[in-house]
Length: 172
Image 1: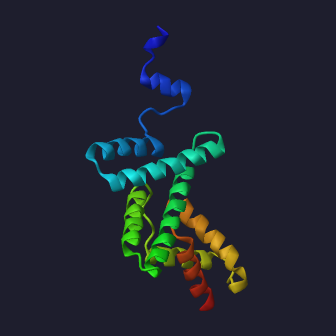
Image 2 (image 1 turned 30 degrees about the vertical axis):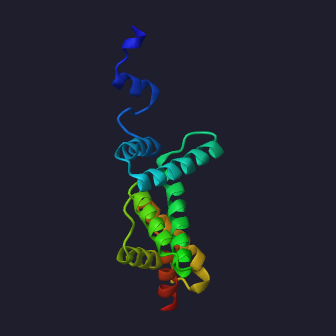
Image 3 (image 1 turned 90 degrees about the vertical axis):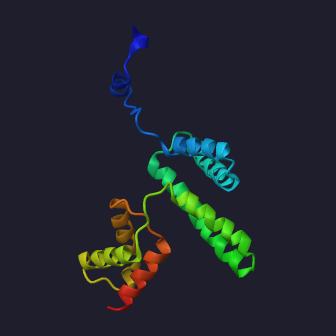
């Protein structure tokens, strides 16, 4: 009798939605697909991503929600971008290309990144909402702008936002 609980009843009782797949589960599924396809580059990248997520889960001592998982992936992307820059400066283009390919794989698991125009528009809107901020208020403007982007579910590079904020505040 208890074994015949339906999936809908289970989700109502436990609060677990059995239809959604967590980011870690999706990565595991794609990892298996990459193994079967013998796609070594993708497989290596997905193993690294899964390891980073598992490490963060262990540090937290509990499962990660999607936002925390996305933060881990964003950190991995930032590391790869720094590596691309260093490899390019050092004349190691093949390594820079490998890192750039990994960035594309990792980005496929994140929401779409905001465009330069969207960032400029968001920063201008944030500045307009504030009481004529100056360069001294840059930290507050950054905090409010980043919160605006996060609230809209947009992924942004903090350096780009910082550059736009500096440019907009310098123009005042």
